[in-house]
Length: 261
Image 1: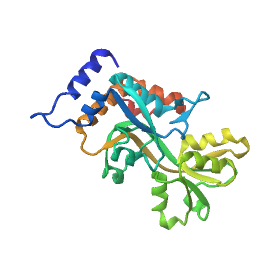
Image 2: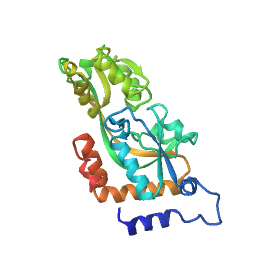
Image 3: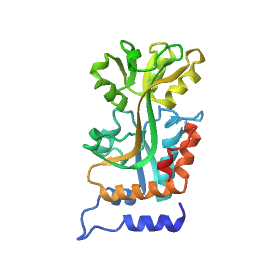
Image 4: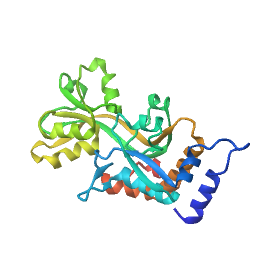
């Protein structure tokens, strides 16, 4: 983001509310000169640790770019799918940037930014398994990460006769698939394709689409000025191509055209 554009964005976002209202989250973050970002570092390629044990991934680089543009120190608050929302609700983190898909249920307890990325959610199985639709998955055990949209979606499919095994996070779910404890998983298409990289003898592939989700940043309810700042930043970095470049670097494909336009 060019300096003049960034300066204008911050000048607008940081204006005090009429009547000298109490400091809000944006004031707190700018005063602390630090932004605390809840990110799962065990869900490659969105969040992971590199060989030097430094955080990397598409969500990590998104958070790093956000902090840099806002002139803030970045602190990662490590999280799992189940603890992302509680982290911002209890003020342990300022914002969630962690493959957080937008759902009506979540919108009741947190506020979402504009989408900054997208996620194709699927049921993936061993390549040897012949599964082209939901009837082919009847009676099969499907591993999910607890608290994710995949967990919620499959749990609500009571007429499908699905057997669901829940794991505490994506890392343990992937380990279960790699170590022959699970032959099917419900997660992102990106993670499905990576299972074989960990164990070539157990290559998985996407079998049945679940849905495509918009991924957004999440903040606690009522922080409109902070949310406006995030939305302005996302819009600018979708327009200039930086968010698309981050996504393509780690996921091997570009963001949907309608998101980039």
